[in-house]
Image 1: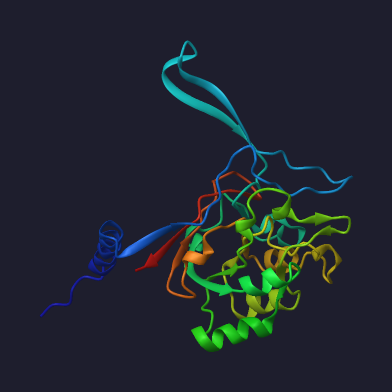
Image 2: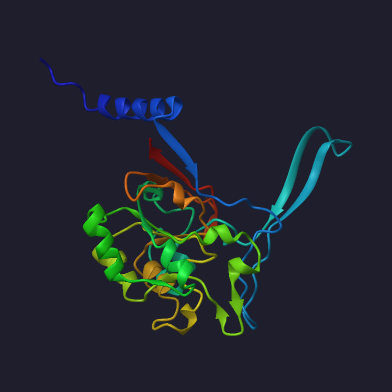
Length: 268
C-alpha cells in the first residue's frame, strides 16, 4: 500500500483541532483583561517619561458623522493592559535581528503552557519570588519544561482588579510577586522557553528595581531574545500542563510590544 502523502497529516490534525473547539472537546480560555479607560498602566517616577492611558474617542455612531456605521479612534501605550513585551523593548535585546512586533517569526507566538501555581505563596507574601528550586520541584511533579513553551506564573494577582491594590505601590515602590534573579537565566537558557507570563502589571516583581541585576526578567529574558506577557488573567482555569497558548501581538512596525488578546486552548 502506498504511503499517505505527508500533507494529509497536518490537514487531519487541523481538522481535529477545529472539531475539538466546535464540539467542546477543547475549551478556549481568554487570558486577557478588558482594555478600557480604567485599565492600569505602569507608572514610572520622574524624570522618566510616562505611558499614556488607554482612551477611546468616538468617530461616528449611526449619526450625521456616519449614518450607517460605528467606529472609534483608540490611543494607548504599547505596554497597556494585557500586553506583549518584545526583545527590543529592553536595551539588552535591542541588537537581535527580528526582535520587534512586526518581524518576530509568527510560530514563536504559539506554544505549550506550563502553569506554575504559587497563588498561596503570593497571598501570604506580596513580594514572593519564584526561585529555580520552586520550578524544579514543579518539574518533579509535571515533567521537564519543554523548549518553545510559555511559562505562566499563577499568583491570582489579577483578582485584585484594576485599582490601587493591583499596583500595590508604596513609598519604596510597588510590592508585587515576580521572579528571583537567578531563576530567569535558568528558564531562558537552560529551558529555552518562548517567554514568561504573569498576572501583574509587568513581568518583573514590584521591588525589582533593587535587584542585581535590576529588573532581571526584562534584562535577562529580553537579553536572551525571549518574550514577556503581562496582566494575564484566568490562569486558575488552566491545568499545569496540556494547554496551548496563542499570543500574537499587533504587527506594529518596530513596535516594542502591544496590547493583545491571549487565548489558551485547553483539553476538556
